[in-house]
Image 1: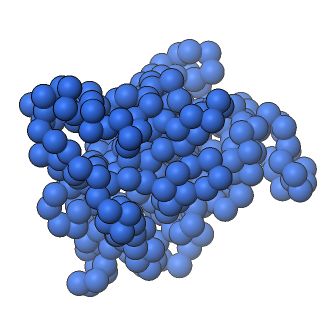
Image 2: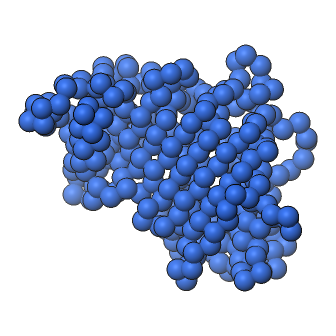
Length: 303
């Protein structure tokens, strides 16, 4: 009952601390409380400290992935129970490959300046790409599997405490567990819950669920994280990385399921997140307007 009540409460687009006690009293649920600011800060710091402890390139393999998304024509692309390889180095060096017996059929990549996704199957050979500067400025078309949200869902990016439009998180404690609530202001200046993290009650107390909301209360992204273990060759102080992920983008019709058998530090001194400059298939740039300071020579020849 407490979990059901918590779920109903957290789905409210305009959750505010002042009205929270009244809602719980009216529902007849067990009372919840909000932790002191220091408790919320400590919970968030634990997550960010774990990310900061990544001391090399993470290498996730063997791995199995199932993925589906819709392209710009609305055609659903599916890759089911394929082998995968994940490489990540701070801050945004990402190489995530989906492989078949014929080779790599899909690739999600990023470096400090750009992000990209490509598919290479008989019926479609296309690369979508954009710059982080345009994406962060709100000047990029949305891709079905947004790279920034993917990194957040995999906990491969630091979580900001607050900004000019984001409020510091609150820690809610109830019979179902501990929840970090992140709020932001909508266009009218009202706060709404933009993200909810349910913290795993077992060590290392990292997120077990992450749900992102739009200002209208709709779910933008939902991630389920399980089976945290330390980087296998990182020693007793190595960071924790989940081994099972299910990430869904309901509004985009996309989902990714990833099972990592092992995550260790990559021992090879080789570049792995270079932009595919020699791509010879279809190409689409997601930036709607060039970001300030962007030079044409820094991007692909074709737009």
